Length: 244
Ligand SMILES: [Zn+2]
Picture 1 (tube, rainbow, N blue to C red):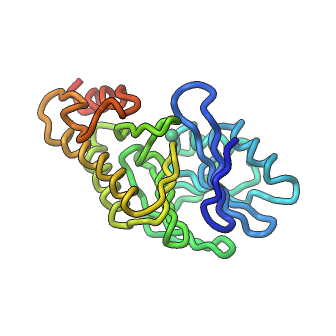
Picture 2 (cartoon, rainbow, N blue to C red):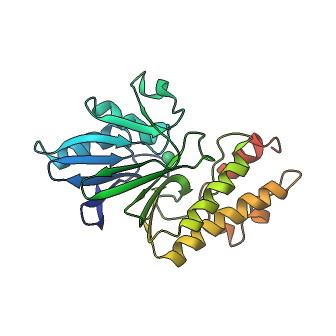
Picture 3 (cartoon, protein in one colour):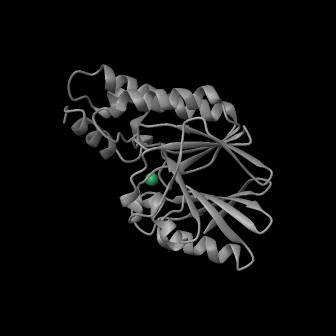
């Protein structure tokens, strides 16, 4: 378990991968004896966070960036918590558990924190970005890095997702948060670093959108592809776009 303090009463807890390439984040917001989580990891990750918080802290709510198992399954360890997800969130992922749907632009307060939400499809149709106190953006898997910090190509949910993914990333760029928490990989700090990381993915997606047949990753990625993790995401994207 690895801890990073994002701001007062906002802590990010990360778990190194047991297998595969991706560390998982759970973001913890505290308000005295209550906690709100953003994403829940797998079951073992949520269980470790509950242990860490101790008996005196109750997890009231879990906001899920999207429905994929590495973000959502931890909710199974939190049967009493309210689960919040993007409008249309597929409840079968949580075995029929009720999910409170969050509309685009919705806001909630949690203790001293103000959370606002934006539906940001591309990686998933039901993908939610959370902005905390107008400064910290949790963007889920709109931006992905491997555990070693290598950027990966965006991963498209389906054949129609490319334009959505571009729009979602453009919105994140316009938001210009001070701190960006990706679904996997290092927390980014500073507008310049964040804009650079977003621009890489936008360049890739636009190049992919302009291509009429199967293109190599090196034709879409503007810098050294030797630094890129998970080249297979590119192959999967080509397959979804019918260019495999
Ligand atoms: Zn993920």
